[in-house]
Image (cartoon, rainbow, N blue to C red; front, side, top):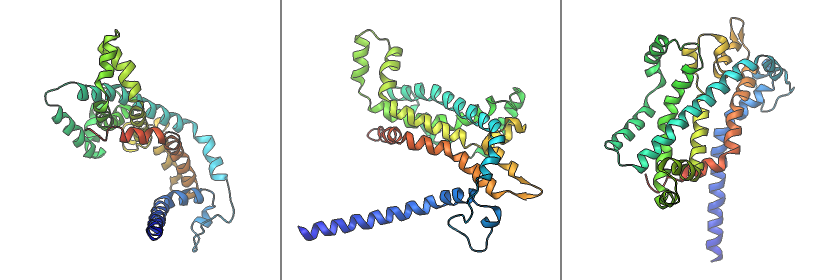
Length: 278
């Protein structure tokens, strides 16, 4: 018994070491970006790379503050607009596919899966022509609508299994207590599915926050572009300001990190809540 216990302990130590090694490999690029943001350009291109800056400087971050307001505002508007639009369509659609017998529902689900495989470049031209005809270029509506088309299918596929696993008896009890189907959906189904809804909201926000192709294509004015597109301002005919790019990259990924750190409990719960029935 003692020997078996030691063997299991050794296995756990080995697995933990492997997990730490894999995590270190995946997190090293993030570490490298953060460390280089505190270095001078000369040290970044030194023949012998340094894992820690010899001279810590915050100048790259100070340079961002003055020019961050406009792209940050654009990113926030696009990300929150896309998230709100995605949830408004995804929650009722996921609930409908889970609760009602709809002819061809499996075909719809297959279409949602296929849309997740399409590259953004495939739909750029038709969307550009449509938005051009509607006079929506250089507005927030174009990137909001286009990024929402990416997150809506994913969020529907995320929410549907969650609604399938929700006991129907709860909604039946609400109907007996005087609720109609709509109020039952608002007061019972959505609150019970809160973790999955939060997960869908987080992923919708991140997809829109990280978008570059749609924002660059549909907004030709520099004042309308989000943070992902504004990073090109550090590349000009005089060269590339690498420490500024690294600092800008840190500021760009910071909201995403905050979301996943603060919402990880809901995200994990939302991802596994529909794992029993699909």
